[in-house]
Amino acid sequence: MFSFTAQHILIMRLITQFEINNPSLLHNFLFLASAESLDYHDIGFYDFVRSKNGAFSPLLQSILEELIIGHLLSKGSFALTPKGLDTYCALASALKPFEIYVDRCFTVYLRHKDNLDQINETIKNHIRFRKGKPGKKLFVNDFGHR
Image 1: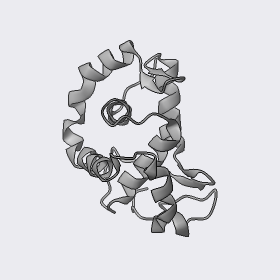
Image 2: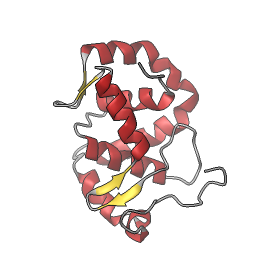
Image 3: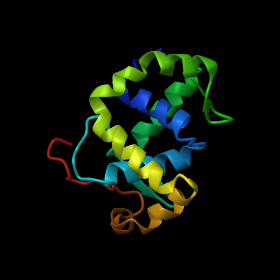
């Protein structure tokens, strides 16, 4: 079994509460949340690279794979399993110190809640994404310690 981080719990929350139903949408959603502000947050994802389908975070992808291997996330339906939901409910309070970033995610969700698939199109118009080169990092030297 793997060690849970706040990022694991955040992913579980987003899948459950924001009805994010596929990995590509989740990658693009978290890119928009991280790009919403240049304020660095420990729980944020800043390793995105530009792909032809949007933003891709290797760290986020590894977390998704760990959740699938741990039988907490169903790969087919991209939803938490009963075990995953129980685990999330038991650990959800661990996100309390990261409320600023969670609020940022909620802001992005509210902006797109009527059509979450719009996120996949919105990202293509984001200045940071448009300036990025395919296969290259989208957050380069934005944070001194990264």
